[in-house]
Length: 212
Image 1: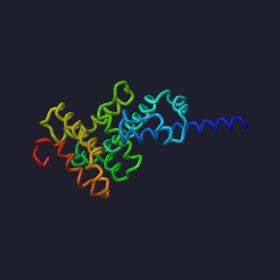
Image 2: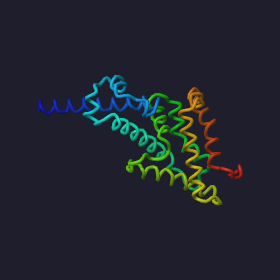
Image 3: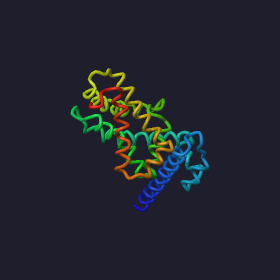
Image 4: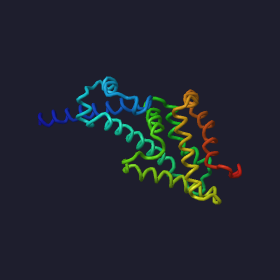
């Protein structure tokens, strides 16, 4: 029994170290991107030693990849949670609000939530090479958006709608890193939504009549 308790404690300590390293990597990746992060900075921030990185991840690159993949998955899960309730009666404004809500919440909350979004922004809107595990979620997010776009813009072909979806995602990524994103983050959550949703809806709408 005592041996089992000690094993559990070691396992919990190991998990805390792993989580701490991943959180530290995420914070630094959000600030500088993968090329600007060093192993020593991550371990100092996490209060861990260099050997812990090798033990839990194998290398600095593997640690950074794990943090980025974690950020992408968090973002996609949050976006899908917002998009899933939409249906063919939803408006472009509804879609824009759902599509942008994870970013708007992160801007309002700051901290690790915003670190996640800034990390996602740095790797772009396409799943990185070799990370096929997330392809299904990217595809599902796109399908959910297309379902609403097709109902609202029946005269626009699918490839054009996909392009507009990518543009809307690119806009949100840019906001996470640009100075204007810092300005938005200083606003109340309601004001962020008032400012941002019409812009995202405009990206979806393209040159369609404003009443759609």
